[in-house]
Image 1 (tube, rainbow, N blue to C red):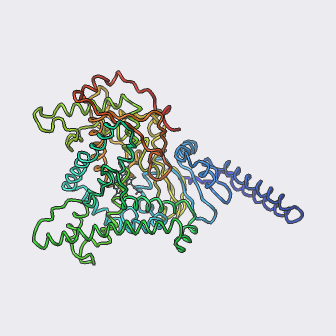
Image 2: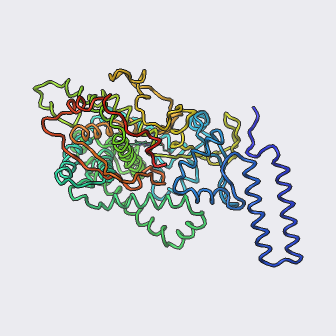
Image 3: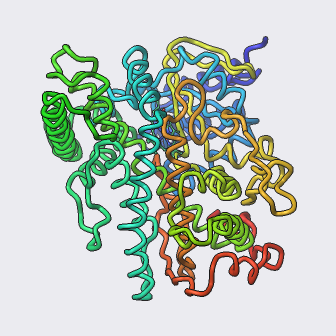
Length: 578
Ligand code: HEM
């Protein structure tokens, strides 16, 4: 197979011309010109070099010295849309490089075949890598998010066996239902009674933070208390994450010097990380003590949160190597777990609710499906009017499942991800990647590729997930898309461990809210994504809630509004932030 060089065919001649121009400029400068002339000559060369590169590559402008940095800086506010446009014009994969001597180079891709090559076929050649680990080292330690090789394998094994166990599945469902019933719905009811708008994204972030801590640590963090207080651990984890991410955008010598001098963002990072670790250590110590007291009395350890299950599986002990899981293993694992499940589902739900508000036809179909499930409940049962649905009921909500998947296709909670090449490699399309190069895959852009999803790729159409297009309004089963086309949950051996939990949680929350309330986005509320590694809504999502009237049930709402009577007023393309 021919290796597709990132340079064009006439690359050698162009480089020679550039070198000649450089030599001529330098000679002229030395002979008689002044500083201004020299600056003009250098600027000319700079522009010339950039133009040369532009002709040679189908990818973005790579400036002399600064590489892609000026282009990225210029597109900071629309970086994902920019990457999408460049990927389309480059045919799916294009090269990039950072500043000279920064050792930052690689490719950006939206090609499912390349994504499969990196995430599955040549998995061993594409670890998270030292670049990622160094930046998240203090916060995540050797946690699953940060680990490769044996350390990753061990945690992956522990995570999958516990998270996918029937006991954890049942427990985590109870934590979601309990939090929806006791905390989320009362807050929304109060907002409905007050008639004032609230930021739904903020509430959902508080919900998922509390929920992941309940499921992971067995603790109630209290983010969703009625007063919506600031919770020190939650704030510290947020700060530590953002400050770690800052290391990705400044040159290494800058943040390393700041770390050495203990100043600025590095000082704040140190403080935040210390708080996060202290919280995790205390929770772990308390739980070990509790476990030992129970086990010492010969009793069954009743707790089902992930931390307790792991302690139980490891047989307790003092964490000095006598047990399966050391204290450090458990602490690192839990911090990664909380980070993974803290905001992904809330962000997905925020986009989902916004998309529903723009597409009443879809909302109507979701309500119709829910109405069918309520109708099937025994009339006399105590749960007949309950808006908190059981896991079994939630599983039957296929159209809701499709609508949430479709929302994440367009607004993936993790919009980009990357891996690092251990050795030189060649992708299936012939693109070469050098050892140490980064392979960035833009999940956001993949959702907007006609080549992957067809001409209607920018439209919000849950029906594309329903077998047979969901014709007739009934539930007919879901389409199973390739992980490598739909890399929203990652793919291959490192596919998200929490996917099942995430869907259960999102569907339970969405069904409860939609059944109980009419949700209206405040008119004129600006909607745009925040340009960070999680696709938050930049301005949150201001909405008002209105309780559905007592006599109105979702079934009546459906028949009043009807799936075919309501037409979406806008399509994604006219409505998106672009
Ligand atoms: C809509 C919700 C979610 C989305 C879109 C999502 C997406 C992802 C993605 C893209 C990765 C790969 C990250 C990387 O390796 O760089 C990942 C990994 C992971 N996710 Fe999720 N996630 C979601 C919810 C959750 C939840 C709720 C949990 C916990 C219960 C969770 C636990 C994990 C863990 C432990 C990993 C690491 C897997 C590994 O490296 O082997 N995720 N997720």
